[in-house]
Length: 400
Image (tube, helix red, strand yellow):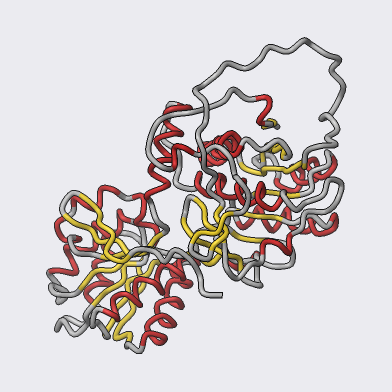
């Protein structure tokens, strides 16, 4: 367990553009219809922590009468420890940037048991849970939190665990697929093919492709599943129409799979087809070095503010964060903003999270729907030789 209170931290600052001048939330700003979660203002240069006199140490955590207690449930040991640490560090950066004085965040390690971590967090007075990371952890934590009337803002993207007090901030592949399909249709493409991995992700990608194409007024001419082996990928591609009768083909998997699949598609009837990808491609910079993927499109959350957050993170922690760190940062900004109307000693006002106008954070505009699932404003990127380029920017706001 680790605590983060801004008054107990050294101030942090590093140069770098508009985002790097984050310091104070300055109220609830309106940016193109969204309630901005991005704090702004000038921060002072780094200072050392002020020494304090040793006091009496008592068991448990101090009692807060002027700060809201918030629990962060992430893996700090085990296989996903690096991801958990990235998220935890990002929450610290968010507290420092906002200079909030009324929120205390305590980190609880879920590796030894998510339910036990949640029970400890609630016993210590936390009124909101940020996390956990994985859907199976949410399933363990949710009953514990519901019995206590404590809401959860999770980093999972598994929509099956959302609702009834559970809000999901994770990147939803269905949204990414729908966005890139819509963009392709607007560019004159109407006949689509799909390559999807076997398993839960592939099943959801298949459903998203079918629904997205139908909504766009197009046709799915073929959809093939594979098991991620080279032989299975090739076999699936060879089952696609070999006469080039599809305008675009979605590879609903990682960049590694896309790099394997693209040359085979090009030599098996898909030479002129536009290759499409999902949000999984967002962190795969090596895609820009694959000639067969040049001109491919994929949709994801905007990256401009995240790149600056990553630079700031590296300057403080000496390592590159995982992309999911942005979820931790934005979850804190959302908490801090909501805490402006949150009276001490009362439950977290989770109704405030349902706002049709949405909010704006590191990952751009987002809002929670009535099922507790984050709807995000996505951009479309194109893979060029050695780089990615935004070909259709993310909308700045939602239409209520």
